[in-house]
Image 1 (tube, one colour):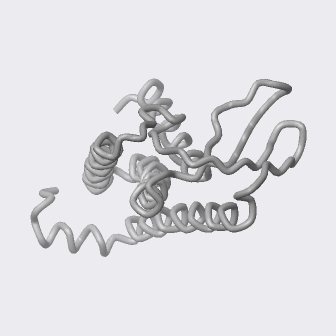
Image 2 (cartoon, one colour):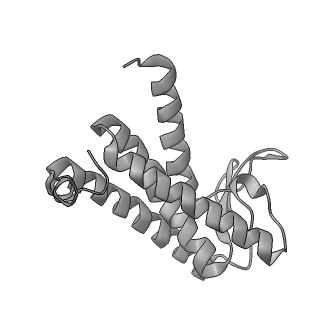
Length: 165
């Protein structure tokens, strides 16, 4: 399918399965937004203990995954945000030309990616709040979008290693 052919684009949006994948992306984005808004509005001042393994602890991540490339430099932050935006655009293109199993995987990734890029553009940071821990070992704090991105990447890797076309 040519990405610039108007008839192909029309056919893309009329396919029932593509509508489902689009709704999946939107649902993940909305679920992420609702969870982040709830945490921002209700848990911004303290850590909330849930059980021996999970806390809610709002942290504003100015870096990318796991705080990598976090900096106070506006120039570096803007550059990283532009690169992330370009990667998302590339993933949208790959999504459009993919088969259904791959569209499912890219829907997971894109739903989460749209949630996190929205935060980067709106808040200039991504709110992370899920704190998994065991005794004194704490995993990196993350959010709902990160869960879907991770699930999509894991499925993508498993498919790449074990399913041959």
